[in-house]
Image 1 (cartoon, rainbow, N blue to C red):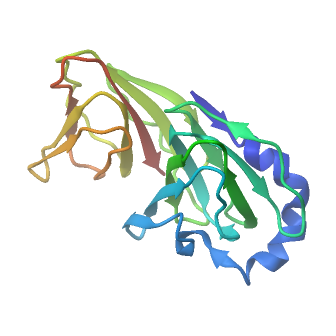
Image 2 (cartoon, one colour; image 1 turned 135 degrees about the vertical axis):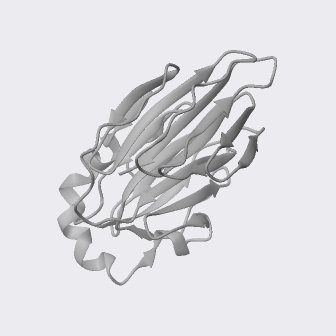
Length: 226
């Protein structure tokens, strides 16, 4: 399930107020709770972890963002000079798409009663996002699109294999449940995703297929970076 920018909508009234101060604040990937784990010219992957009841540093988002819930996804935010907003709760696999390019916004985040763990994907484009339609396969279900992302889910029963297919743009695939093997033919590589929250980046234009080699169903969220 994908939630489209509800968090951003709830804060939109304050964007103009925070944009001026954002330039002097900490970029999100410099916040220790939002470390970079992968980066190219097109995208950035952040492995976000905030301990229960703890807060992040105040940081600025300047790029469109896709946030995939892994666990403990109860969080609230505080804009500069304001009080805490309401709690936002999501289930594992839910994705939040937020548009920050062109209207950067700063906030501090606080985790709920469990450690907050998400994988965040930044599209580093500030404009001219692709309008290509997403590539799908027989087991891929499109969930949502924004100007910067296409989000799909892939569910494979025990022992099932997805059809070989090619994406037009790089994809960040995040394991939500089960175990998956990704075979990327162009790079002649095999990547194992065994634990919830494991992820991999699928190269554009290189055919790949997902294989479930376990005895249980598997669930993957794919975020295509346009």
